[in-house]
Length: 238
Image 1 (cartoon, rainbow, N blue to C red):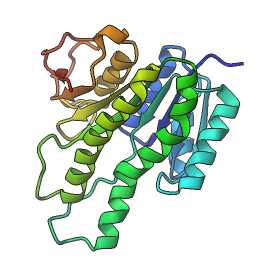
Image 2: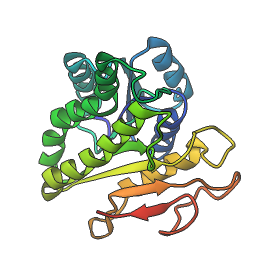
Image 3: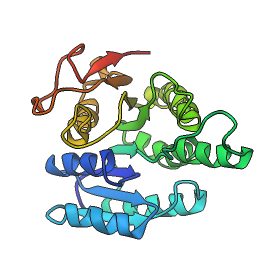
């Protein structure tokens, strides 16, 4: 049996693959889920030196997402860390999208996370410990990105609900709220952001944080965990 590991939903280029690499370097097995086979192939190539499995599934397809999670659990066992990183990022002003398009965006940004956590968290709770991290963003809503602003507000609310539901059973639930556009070599380098996921996962229960607001850090800054209030790791609690 492989050691306990992680499942990452939404493992495309950017934060998803950076988190996968970060966790793999710590010795965790990594199960990765993405909608595109090409994305999974690229992710497996990146992690070719590690114990990883990739499965294709659309986060909005409840049956397919549950089946993908089950396939990873069958291979690696129940994970100690679940990351939901899927999102539909698009520019749209109020009224640009149809009701159907708004619902489709909400399905990716929020409902997929509900599906994944509801399916896996009860089993994780039986172990008495584990971490669930949702990728957030848009701490200030933008009228040019209406559907994403609504979705990320939903992620923050969902994090609170999940924390209240599962923390009594020993699961740490948190969100990393990214306050800017993600790109390598910038203040929002995905490898720096990925460090925050590992930081949350290894926190002792008495110091659990529920939200890290990542406000960026200078290129070339240390990858070591930073104390609350440092650039790149502004912390909010709820």
